[in-house]
Image 1 (cartoon, rainbow, N blue to C red):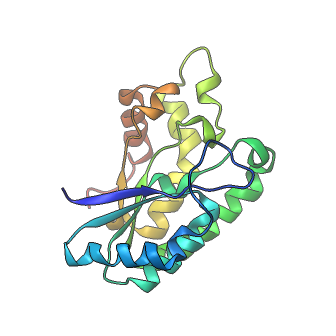
Image 2 (cartoon, rainbow, N blue to C red):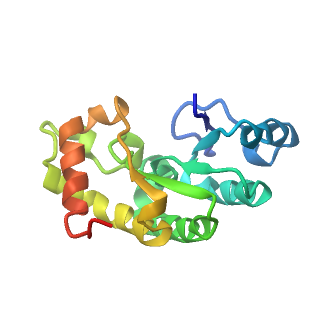
Length: 186
């Protein structure tokens, strides 16, 4: 047992069923429980949507000794009201990532774009995308995170079995290899 993961993904109106409330990370009871993680040497994985990244930043500032793992690059949204405004939300997401990356206690899991909520359309296709297509579609998101957090605070991650609706595990990891092909070993 190394840590906990808690989903606080919240949108209004909802883009999927949700059991959370807005701004859970600011709740005094939540923070009281959260304060015990560092004492036990446990990590915290944050599953939220990109429009909640300010809440994560405030939590990280309040607990500077606690490691927080940002799951799925901050919960990309591309369905419902977010689908028609992709450029707008991509720009907003980038700004939130820049701010989160300034805090050394936040690290980033890179992946999770195969879920239908991201709106990339891969799950709607009759045939899965190739690893080259996945790499090309993911690269702007992946490279922004790596550039802002640095490779020492990023890790590629699979989101399986959820991403299986779009592509296979092997295709995803081949896409990671394609995106990182030009990187140095260090």
